[in-house]
Structure formats: C-alpha cells, structure tokens
Image (cartoon, rainbow, N blue to C red; front, side, top):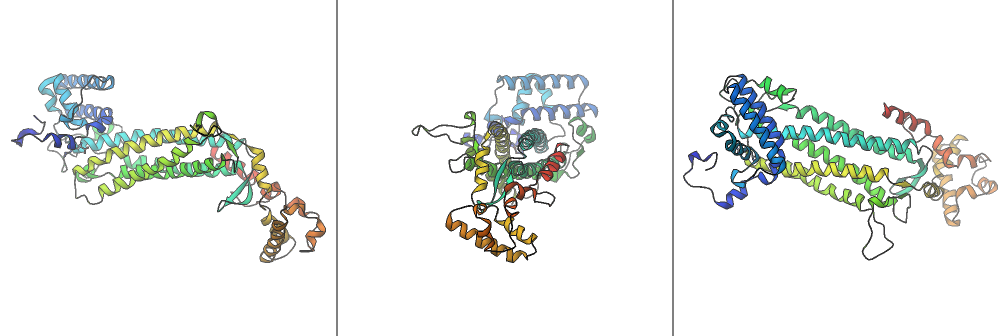
Length: 453
Ligand code: ARG
C-alpha cells in the first residue's frame, strides 16, 4: 500500500505510478533529504515528540540508509514515488513503526522545498569556486600578455590595436559580474522553509529557529504558503546560469574563430581538440563548440521553469515536480563547462606573432591618424575625412598607411610631418589611450592589480 493509501479503495494504474514518480531523478537529493530529516527529528526530540532513544535510533537508521544509497545497496522504487517516500519506507524496514513518527509536523511540500534549497546552496558554493578558478586563469594569462598586440574588433572587422591582456580582462569583468550574481542569490536561497507543513503551518509548537540553525540557514521563511510554492531561487539559478553560459559561449565563439586558419591566433592543446574521421589534417575545437552548444539546453531549462511556474495557483501543485530535471541539468552543465573551459584555456598557446601581424593589416591606425591631425589643431570631423581619404587611397594601392612617404602624406594635409610615423605605430595607439579603463598598459595593470586584491 502507498504511504498515502488510507483514503483509496483502488490501487493506482501502473502507468500512473510511472508517470507520477520522480524517484528516477530526485534521488539526487538523497543527501539533502536525509540531512533535513535528521534536523527535523532532532527538533521533534527537542519539543518532546520523540524520546531521546527514538531520536538516536532514527538518526542511526537514516545514516545507514544514506550509506546504502551511496553503495547502491538500497533499492529505490517507482512504487514509492519520490526520494522522500523511498527514504521513509527504507526507514520503516529498519526501525518499523517508529519511522511513522518522523513525518509528524512535516509535509512533503516543505520537505522538498528544504531539500531543493540545500541543493542550490551547495551548487552555488561549487559554482562560485569554478568561476573563481576561471578568473584566476584569466588574470594569470593577462598578466603575462600585457604587451601582446592584437586587433580589437567591432562588427568582426579590425578596428583598433589592443593587447591580449585587455581583451581577456573584458571576460574577467563578465565573470566577476556572474560571481556577484551568484553571491547575491546565495542570500535569497538562504531561507529555511521547513515547518511550513503542507501550506498553512503545523499544529505543533515546532522550533523553527532551532531547525534553521541545524540546517545552516540564516533565516526561516515567514509565510508558509509562499515557502512551499516558491521556486524563485530555481528560476534565479537558471537565469544566472544562462548568463554564465552566454559569456562562456561568446568566449568559445572567439576561441573557435581564433583557432581557424583564417585567424590563427591560438593553438589549442591536443588534449582539448579532436580529429576528423575522414580529413587527416583537421584539428577541431570541439570543446569550445560543445560549450557554445550546451548554452542552448541551459536557456531551455530557464524557459522551462518560467513556464512551469507561470500559471500556478497557490500553493504547491504537482507541476512543480518539473523543477528538478532542468535544475540538475543546469547545475551539472555549468560545472562541466566551466571546468573544461578553464582547462582548455590554460592549456592553449597564443600565437603572438600572428596576432601582431594582424594589427599591421586592416588600417587599425586610421583613427590614430585622425587623432594625430586633431593634435595639429584641426577639428575632428575634418581630420576623420582626411584620414578616410588617405585610407581609401591606401586600400586602392594595397599598402599600409605607414608606407606612404612624407611627401605623399603632405599632399593630403601639410600639417603632417615626420612625427606621424611614430603616431601610426600600434603601441603609440595603445599608450595614447588616456581614459581610465582603456587598453593602455597602465590602465590594464591597474585593473589587474585591483582584481588581484
Ligand atoms: N515529488 C514531489 C515533488 O518533487 C514532492 C512533493 C509532493 N507533494 C505533494 N503534495 N504531492 O514536487
């Protein structure tokens, strides 16, 4: 008979058992479920619902069940629907009717809410660790590439000279915002829902303060109905996760481009590349492509949970069981993607000469030519036009601006003198950036030092 079988005459259809059950996926919550049950049992003992000896017996049995699940010895079945009732029935096998006392002053609704919050709290600790690892690698590579030239792009067209350190530190900023978002979410997940019962609270003077402390939360929820029907923290995790994946995906896209023969800015290590079964010359950036691809499933999980929640009346509805698979998938996807990405990046080699060569082609110094003329007293729009004409003529002749002779340059403006050649060099351009947060060496160094603190 089902644990809730009392008011039923007939048993459920086998199809319904399968359809209704969540044990195939929510068994991932076994640790959190047992942690929650132990805290609940301790609290019941505190308020005199369980004897001291009963408490000890329950805790010992719950720990044994945990070990049995870990070794695979415990049999989890669809007949027991979900992780909560599977553990309860395993407990009955061990302690008999004592197991029935544990569910006093508790519902599966507040039980699953506390399990999920514990799971998300742990996931966030891991996630922030992974983000930190990636950020450390970014800082390291940036520090040793302060003088590595590369083209900065807009519209994927070569735009202005920058350094690799500056480019990578842009990603550092993105991931540091992600870290911030995770830490911010930690505060909101940190609310203990246990003790809410099914939706209205329970008819026992439970000590929620004690429960909260046992489970390591900093507060307990103030409205039972909200506590059992709130999945904002799942949605927020999906949302933060989607943003992280978007950042990883943009970075992956650049790595894919950079590793192509067209760019040749980066050589991925063999460890994170794959070959082709037909074309012997191929070395493919599969890791980066997979990360870019997996962004799709995380976005999907966000849309999934938003849609599950949008029409639900208060309080708990079974729809909410659909919160889990997407959550687990996102947490696991983020973990593997961040880990692989960090390893892939730190084992890659930047082809500095090619990057510097790319700065030479594509008239990245045209803006500097215009700024040079501004320095000679012309208004910027006029300078832009003169620099534009020079660039166009050079494009026609297929030569870089700095290869024009001084007399040729003077035909465009007699304000131009010998000093123009210095102004056209990439490092002059980079060091010419005076604004805070620019690609100049001092500015990037200041940024890196700030981040190292
Ligand atoms: N397996 C359920 C879930 O994940 C647990 C809560 C069930 N609550 C209920 N009232 N049927 O949502």
